[in-house]
Length: 365
Picture 1 (cartoon, one colour):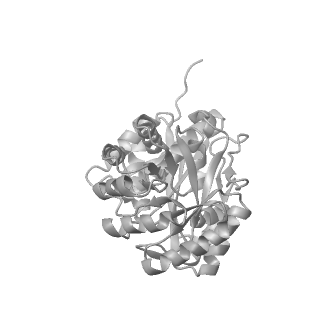
Picture 2: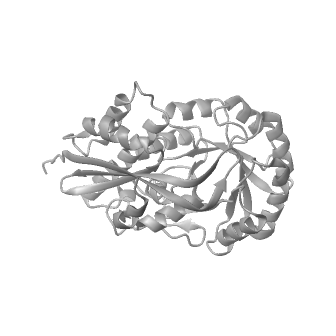
Picture 3: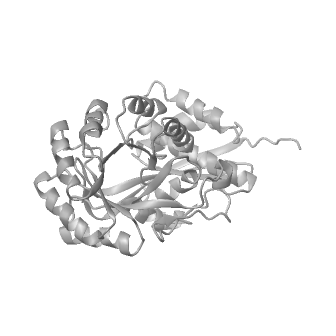
């Protein structure tokens, strides 16, 4: 049969600022709202949906820099379009806001392609699994011990999570007591901790030794994620049960290649809302597979689910409190967590998400 191109006719982006349900903080930052950037790409009578969690500035990058290179191009030619977007941001810098803008558009392009073909996005990627494990994530340093226990305990007892993660680092002297309180609420489930780069190398090493005594199995960003030598030091010298993880601030494949070449982590994290979309995520997955290293998806569980059904060596998706809440409020088709896993809806074309624009209007910027 003859191949029919689908020229792109429209690319739109809007920003929404969604308040958190309580003040939140981690080891190096505090916030009370999250900015969601939603993109639509239209071609062939269909619309693809993508999004990222970024700055409002991403809307301008999409409108003025990325959209012009996509118009009238074939929506099926995603690798070529991805490379064109990367080339277009060369002089403003690929990392950061530009990468998140590309991420949202790339996700929309993949969703559009699957909708044009009338197939679920996991089938387009190629299924390696029909369900993906999750770990509960939140436990912000701004929480009281009671709220910490309630949140982590609910992930274990209501959602069936075998792993939960809490934030540490803003008040290190309190963290051991907080971790003990967390363990009381999760029973035999495994505890993970995330410092968001709050410590220097020796502080982090001491903390890893103390955390191991409490049964901690994962230490995320004990030092800056750009400090590959420091991460390697922690990986080499932390107690054996404690895995070192990083990668959420990787924006382009070269970062992940350098991190793996440095032997910096036990587990690679990648975020499709930052690492240039599904296309970038699959590149990271291929690097991790070749290393070989396990891969974990950072936050945005609804968005990550389709590509994580395909990624080799995928361990789990982060069931991050903020993003779970936003996705369940503003997207029809957001997955529910049961038995510690989430499953894609393979009866729907694309990623199966529908943005509730009327509900979101009150958050519009």
